[in-house]
Image: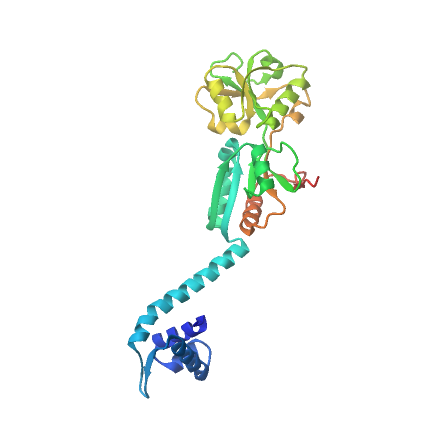
Length: 312
């Protein structure tokens, strides 16, 4: 079978129509160049050049070979470049999980960084609640997730990317929609659109902690796993809910928001921060490259929020 060096030698001579010029182009002397052409002709059992003291010409067989030889060399160069890009993280595929809120508040920035710095990387996006993302990270079916830190998971690292807090979502025109804030006790007797204990356990527990901190109990009327569903229930006038402040960016018409007010210390409990999570054992160079670029772009005080690794 012929080699790439034989094809390179053939194309150089075919384009230069001069063995000396072709040898100089390939940074070699004429004897080894002539030897490569002879080996190629022997392999193909065809004469490729007519050579005399005055000039070099392609034979009919050489004219047929030339376009194919160029394509093979181009494909070889392209393949080498693609493999190199994948190995260094400049190309490949990254699967990203994200929650509904992250899809509005954080994902656009991540996609912009990927487009700017890693244009040859293909991104696959999968919307899922946080617990599903953690399972997917453990199984290797996603490379990174934009989620809430519901539980620690062995081998999964997380880093804070957006600080957030819960606020009260009210139907438009509600008596508590005054712009002055709402006490938790003021909504204790109202029908609460509440999070699922399975798929949205993080928010479920957070809401209960806020109520417990002021000695109140919620009046749970409806349950949903996704924030857009809770807001839709509020827009329909079925009750109130507590959602991250970033949810205001995609709230449906008919929903207004109030800050949660209360005793000193309540704000210390009211955190619904967003994290980037990834499997520390991942062998995907493109995912590692994207993660580093994205984290460097985050404008956040991370003094007390370095990556956390769970190794249970």
